[in-house]
Image 1 (cartoon, rainbow, N blue to C red):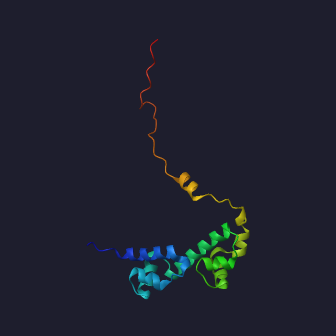
Image 2 (cartoon, rainbow, N blue to C red; image 1 turned 120 degrees about the vertical axis):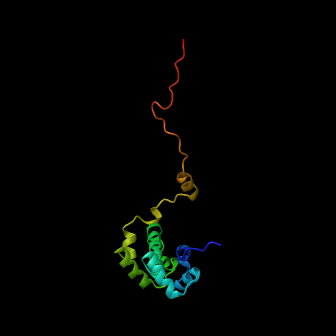
Image 3 (cartoon, one colour; image 1 turned 180 degrees about the vertical axis):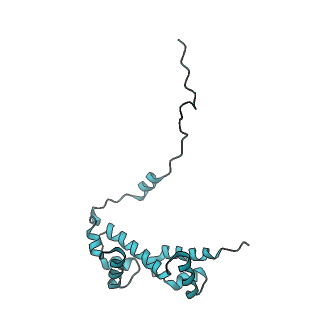
Length: 150
């Protein structure tokens, strides 16, 4: 059996954080997913990705909160809980530090969520589907049709 590169375990833990950021996943769960102790995991994660696991989780949660503030009319408290945070005060101060505006001021800088048009996922997939490449027609490469003799 071929040994797995050590960074692969860290990527697995980061994927867990991306997938379950709203369910209360914490650094201990991420360390368990990587098969490392919490302290060793935190050191290796920071060395590999440039930020601590806690900072990474908080960044993902704040990015998702920003998306919800832009696209929905949910209250700030509800969004705070939806992204896996428990304190609205801490959420507001962290959000302000990250985005330079309070959550309410951030929301006010975008159209209301009710004004955002929702595109059904089936339409997004259809439009985003890759189009097969067709060979380019280059003059001189394809013979021109021969004129009919009358």
